[in-house]
Every structure is written in C-alpha cells, then in structure tokens.
Amino acid sequence: MKLVLYSTSHCHLCEQAAVLLAQRGVEAELVDIVDDDALLECYGTRIPVVKRLDNGDELGWPFDTEMLARFLS
Figure 1 (cartoon, rainbow, N blue to C red):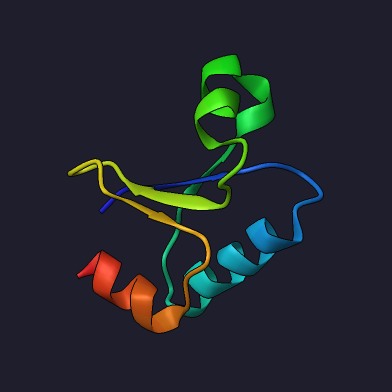
Figure 2 (cartoon, rainbow, N blue to C red):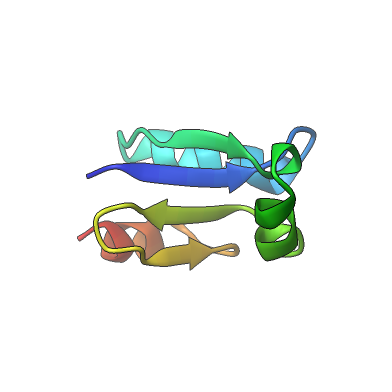
C-alpha cells in the first residue's frame, strides 16, 4: 500500500506522525505542503495527514497507533 504523509518542516506533530508510521514499519512518501499552493490551501491547518493512494482515504491528526492500525487495515 502506498501512503503519503502531508507535512511541513519544523512541525513537531508531523515528526510525531512519522514516528508512529515508523513504529508500525510503514513507509510513506513525505510531501511538504509548502511547495504547492493547492496542498497548502487544502492541508495547511490540518497537517499531518496520512493519505492512502489506493483508495484516497485520509487520516488526519490527532491519531495514535491503534487508529493508524485500523486505517491501514
């Protein structure tokens, strides 16, 4: 399953989300929303967001390992 983690630099919540993904052994493409005006408008106030590319589902912060596991199953 391919995942994207929408985030930006110097975002401690984004760093926490990346750690949760790593703890589950999941890799996600890191996309910095600052580089794209449309992404910034869409995700600017709700990052970090994990998106499944297979079905388009999104999991927005806050989430924990249990919520992440359900999202990935």
